[in-house]
Length: 280
Ligand code: MF3
Ligand code: CO
Ligand code: CO
Image (cartoon, rainbow, N blue to C red):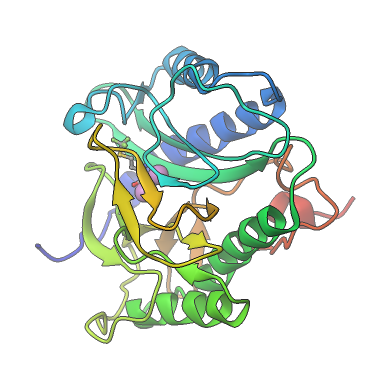
């Protein structure tokens, strides 16, 4: 893999714009989610919202992916394909939005969150909040000159300390004019990831945390990733710009995420959920 690109200021402005749209899309989804809704309905909402904002949903036809968003319910780790499945009380669902703005010669902004549908189990709360806090701790490591491996170390220490596990088969990634590019950003400690971050790099951090073991398997549709032991899995993702003093969370939301950040037990952090920390 080639080395990560240092984005110029005009490119960074494009990244801010596409990432803000991705963040707004997730806010819109949070407001509409409810038990009884199908994941296909989420797909339609996301598809229409992105198209109405002069952008294109990056997942659609990406390497053959058939829909405009990934919806990953309960034991689905990532890359769930929206279908007729109806969300039920007690489910958790990750919605992973990627926008391409503008439609031609655009830039990708990539963000996801896990939502609660109604009353959920203690295990569901634990794994979702572990993923939310893990992302926060990972983002806190980002700074020009810091090592990529520091991100995964922080996330793994926290998650395993709670008895959860960190998925190894899928990692964060550089994002910009391409959907997936260098660098790779593991969410577990990998001694090979001793490269230092540079101001101007943009990449995602997107920890997938399982309540059981970390191993995954892929369904016959070649997309849907499940926990091998069928335990619950949760994920949050932000697109991050490395700066001299730390980072800018490009997909930071302008408001509190409904059905996720608004619950009493949410392990919110100021880096990943800034709207919840704004003075009232
Ligand atoms: N948005 C996912 C990520 O965070 C990638 C989805 S690829 C798709 O990297 F084809 F499934 F959409
Ligand atoms: Co991503
Ligand atoms: Co994503």
